Each structure stands twice: as C-alpha cells, then as structure tokens.
Amino acid sequence: MLKNRLLSALLAAAVSFSLGAAILRFTPAAPAYNPTQLEQGITYDAVGVSGGETILTVDGNTAPAELLTYQIGYSCAYLDYMLRSFNGTGLDLSEPLPGGGDARQTILDESVDLVKQQLVLENLAERYGVTVSAEDEAGMAEQRAADIAQFGEEGYQAEIYKLGLSEASYARMLRAEALYQAFHDAYNTPGNALYADDDVLHAYAAGAGYITADHILLSTVDPATMEPLDDETVAEKRALAEDLLARLRSSDDPLADFAALAEEYGEDPGRDAAGYTFAQGDMVESFDAAARALGENEISDIVESDYGYHIILRRPLDAAAAVEIVRDTYFDVFFTAEVDRAEAEVSPLVERFDVAAIYDALRAAQGAE
Image 1: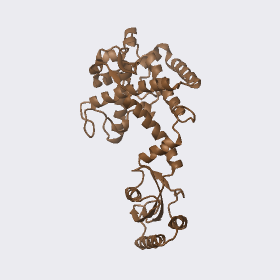
Image 2: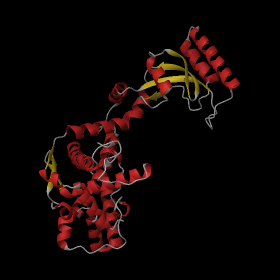
Image 3: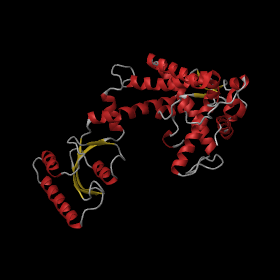
Image 4: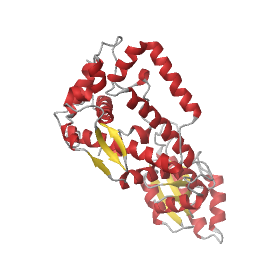
C-alpha cells in the first residue's frame, strides 16, 4: 500500500467531488456523448465492463464498477501530482514506483481499498444511525443546480461522464463525503454510541506510547536562526546545566525544585508547566530516547540536542492532554480497524481493470495533454 494510504479520499478528506474542483481536468466545452456512452460509461469504453456492474460487495452493500474507475483515475492523477511535486517527474505506469512496487497493481489495489472504505462507511452509518444533515442535503441540491446552470443539462451529464461516473454514483460520492463528516461529528458528540470516553482514550494513548515530560532547556543556538552561539557562551550554558543538575540531585524535594528552576532558568518559550505529551517520533531523537529511559518522576542527566542542553523530568502521563491529542487519531484507528475487519467480495471483473487503459480513457475524455 502507498505510504499512509496517501490516496485515501475518505480518511484524509483529500478531495472535493464538486465538478468545479475535481482533481481531473476538464475541457472548457464538453463534447457531445451519445446515450449509450453516457449509460455504459468510460468503464465500458476502457475495459469492456458496464459501469453499473457490481464490482465489490461488503455485508450486502454493493459498489458499481464505475466507482472503481473513478478511484483509479483519482489515484493516478493524485500520484502523478505528488511525483511531479517531489521528484520532478510524473507518473509512468510502465515503470516501478519509487522504492519499488508495480505501479499498476499498487494503484489497482489501493483503488479497490478506497471503494471498500466507502462501502464500510455507508454500512457503519446505517449501523449507528448516522445520516446526512438537512443542511448538507440542501447544499448538494444547490451545487447540482449551480453545475447545471454553468454547464447546461447535457453538459452537466457530460462532465460527470468525464469523471467515469453516472449521475447516481456521482451523487453517492457527494453523500459519502458528507456522511464521513457526519460520522466524525457523531464520534465527537458526548452521549452518542460512537463517542469514545476519556478513560478509553487515556488507555489508548498509554498503549500507543504517549508519555509526558518536562524539561529545563539551556539554549546553545539562537532560537530565531538556529545558528550556534559562541563557544564561551556554550561553555557557560554547560556549566549552568551541571550546577542545576547538582542542585536537583541534592534536593529534598526535587520535583518542586525542578519546577522552580525551570521557571527561573529554562529557555524554552513554548514550555508548559504541565510538560509535553507526545508520541515516539514527535520530539528530537535524543530528547525522546532520554525521556523514555526514565521512570515516572525521575530526572535525567544532561541531554544534548540541536537546541541545547536539557534536564528532563519524566512525569506521569497527562490524561487530559493525551485525550485531547489522540481523539482524532483514535477515530482513524477505529475506522481503519472497521475497514480491515470487513470482508469484501471482489468480483472477478476486477481482473479486467487495466489501470493504464482506464487512466488513458479518462484523460482522453477530459482533453488532458
């Protein structure tokens, strides 16, 4: 799978399905398409499968082939954009992906998974009684009217055709986007069956490796430029760090003295007296490793990083901060687990989905260069 499910329109909310903002480009004037083309769709033109044929089923909920066509087109276009942005070269479906992997098979697998995600989302919404709001319904109706006003009725149908979709599937994609937001809102509403209470999130954060730590930072760089300070100043900072650590080691109440010394000498402008709550990889490596090596309420030796000298206090995990940090993460974990758990029946017709042929057909329909 592509790193972090980079192509996931539902989980990352990375795409708007409105005609004016679709990631695939449109020609200024839509060509005429005959009724058979509009009925069968680009899927039929590209691979000989009617767009309305069932391609995927999850717990009785079915997806037509044209949803897979759309996701293939979106995935190809998005990956092409990413490669141009970071590597300077576009997508070449005849070449392996950077880092290895067959481009066509990877995109097909990802696209099938995206269709599965939509089916699982629709099933979960039905299970938990989550529906699209009246406001969203009205917004979709207004958008349709605006699109028809812009393109005309025939032009509107042609623009949808160029996405690889029928109007029914286009409307379903719009609803899925709104449904995902409604589902997320329900998850964040206390009292809703989807709501994760603080105890659950605290336990999740602890299990996921979140910790809380405070520190006294003595900077060895200019915080504005990250340029090193002169050697004399750095030596003075080191001597001060050693003095502060010695005072803490000999203290009768090192926790109270740590807080006082951090307030008096600490040079981290973003420091909070409650400490930082973070996952592995969130902080610079030397700080993270030293903090994790401590027991709760233990104080480190002097730790050096690119920012300067740290004296670190490992605190018990801050429950309130952890809950706030992981609430959205836990939603993604919940949804991903539901997708992974769901059994999908994949039609043998998927074997006929030639990614290059579909992408070429979509680009031709859209007049892409």
